[in-house]
Length: 216
Image: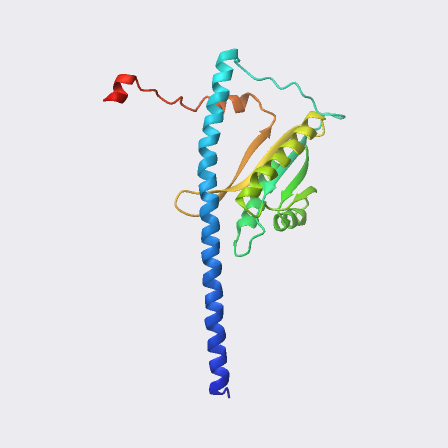
């Protein structure tokens, strides 16, 4: 039978644990806020760059993009999937649902596949279902670490594509849904093809207001 002293120690320990958990939640909430702000800024940046590309296409009167790059050797496509997972704790099915989505998406694409995994947890899950992971990157641990990491990924993928080691590059990641939760998505990074150009045409050029309207 437990004594009053042992029960007191357990209650004190539970109180300390509750305090630690509360602190961890506050730190996580602060980090999430920083990333959400960064995502919002990137959305505005992406739109600005896309509008600039549209203006360039119009200026150069480019009506279509034709990719003439052919696969090496036996003409088999060489597809690279860059998969952004998470190595944080308490993320539930974050990596599992993304892995299932990657598997289903790649099965629908003909050709040889290789994986560039961002995060050890998602890399292990992909390896368990038979995918070859040729590169493994650590997940950026801060907002400031994201830009250098993205530049590294872009340089490596463009080098492999230009050398003919890859014919298509796709990015897989989880995207926040409106309200709460997330959903896995896929985007083609390379090549920049006609489908990509047409997707830009869906953007609407911002309307300008006359000087008279602004004065009113």
